[in-house]
Length: 405
Ligand SMILES: Cc1ncc(COP(=O)(O)O)c(C=O)c1O
Image (cartoon, rainbow, N blue to C red; front, side, top):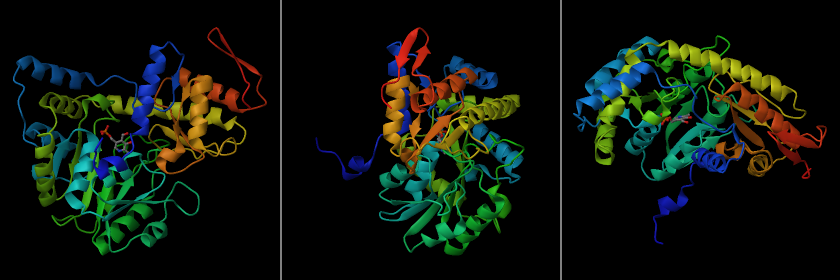
């Protein structure tokens, strides 16, 4: 089959593949535990459902402006003012089909072939392929000190004449790390000095723990003018548990938003009006769901961390936010894909191999599911890997015998 060079350079999303695998195993009746997921299990806010249903009932389901309906832009402006203390105009906002598309369209709007985009590693799985889809070159930067907290020196070293943008995701997927105000300040200054775009992927910015706060990029921008090269990405997927609604947005200078909206207009004509109405409902409705989700996730994190600590040889960095823990399993197996496959095959626990995020030897474990899944999932993993555990394990009435280590 004849397909384009770009298409050939793109790998399927490992996390979406994992969801499919989980669904297939469940359908077969396997007692699978999914610790690889990327979405909260709570229900979407009632205000979102009511708003979408009432628009659907009107039967008036039409095209919208490609950059989003005015009442959603208004809600996003208020959201950004409340959370970032900055007031933007509707022309500074583009609504998209998820934060994912907002990032993708931003990259399409700024990248020429062979231009480079830097991002700290471990990184969200989609960044490299998104850059490749724009014919750009992804430049992941692994902190040299072996931590999950990138240093400005590491990033600065990789900047060259082809560097067009830096993507920062904090709180970070997969590590849960919140980058420090000093680091964000340095990155903003670096981008301003070198005239580079800064894409701030803030999709997890309110899912933070231990009274920590995610850094507001605008607190570090020298002068927020229409020449600003900061592109702020946000959305309803994670904090409102609305992943399936596919609504995210970008906040940037008016010229860039105009260009991005032109691109999106030719791609999708913008997200569905029904789903945009749902996002209006979520943003304008009762907000207590976010805090209760945050608290649940913090508790889940604590349970997962406690259990992982009992795992001899597993090294963990306590996540500051998100719903992921990126744990070092290299003492058991350096090849994370092999390890992840072993865990599915032997004990039906799904995890995402660290290599998908640019760091082998690690597994990403999600704590967005129920507590029972977390405890039983880690228990099964421990049994599968730890030679000191008994030779047999019961999953329901199935008896497993460890015969692989
Ligand atoms: C870091 C990061 N950015 C963006 C997204 C995409 O969010 P959305 O579902 O709104 O497209 C995700 C989803 O997993 C993510 O982890």
